[in-house]
Amino acid sequence: MIDDARHAGAWGVTFAEPTVDVARLRAFKQGVIDKLTGGVGQIARLRKVKYLQGRATLTGPHSMAITGSSGETELQFEHCVLATGSHPTRIPSLSLESARMLDSTTALDLPDIPGSLLVIGGGYVGLELGTVYAMLGSAVSVVEMTAGLLPGADCNLVQVLQKRLEKRCAAIMLSTRVVRLAEERSGVRVTFEAAEGGGPSSPPEQVFDRVLVAVGRRPNSKIPGLGTTRVRVTDQGFIETDGQRRTAEPSVVAIGDVAGEPMLAHKASHEARVAIDAIAGHKAEFEPRAIPAVVFTDPEIAWCGLTEAQAVARGIPIEVAKFPWGALSRAVTVDRPDGLTKLVLEPDSGRVLGVGIAGSGAGELIAEGVLAVEMGATAEDLKLTIHPHPTLSESVMETINGFRALG
Image (cartoon, rainbow, N blue to C red):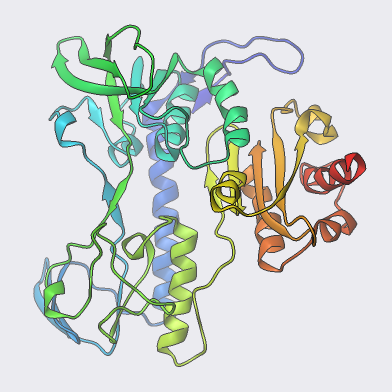
């Protein structure tokens, strides 16, 4: 699907520009989707789950009407789980009906590999998709109205990613906003201006083959017939739930994006387990100490628990330990020393309050951090846990070794 590479390898050999077979790549993506969704369907059948396809309208706290290809079906239920997800946020002032405009859904359809792509939004969705298109050969520019990429993420971790993105992207424009979009024959003309506190944009106008708007997502809480129940919706559009994910209507629970931040698939899965256990009469509560967040860029960024910035904002005393991957043998041997592992610790007890990792495979490594926070592990626990050598996971142990040695 992708031949050759665009970067210099460990031996200093520069490879040619990649040749991308878009049709083959699109077919591969669809094949993966079909295989995974087919697997879920098979599990559902084995567990005797009845599947109905159509548009549902709630008609009361224990009933709904489903309109599908075979007509309308009335359904009665004891309990209902609302898992309607979310949709890409649209900016009315930047609305442009054009095939050149993409969002986080249409960008995954991979219509083509544009010569130039502007990503509006330096959050995780924009950077993930921008990374993909850059690797496929697009000249990607990113514009973010705040002063830094990935607002809310740890700045030390973001620096690792930004350093690599600056080499891979055509431009990264911070403290800059888009004020106008206009389609013309050669592409989409974009007008920029400095955001509050930012410097002048240069150049103020550019033309791009395609524009990806990735400025967040909104919950799908405008559910037909929701008003026939006592379910309450917040001003932000999220459905209110308690610790068991129950809504104000006892027969209705809500999980996933529609039930609140963070909008992450693994958070939704955990909520589902809690909700179903509660419905079954078991003791269950949604009270995680840490929900991992992973940005699937290159390098990846992952974190869980308390961040340094959050601790400072809340006046929580902490100690911070860092370990650069340039001193990690495995990272050096695989030519990916551009990484960092960071721990946020309680000063007196050494309890692990948060973990952040930037580097190749960070998403695979963060689970150890989540377990440490959930179990109330201390720095000493991590230090005394034997990690295999040589591996990237050693960075967690080495972070403590270096920190205690210096301390």
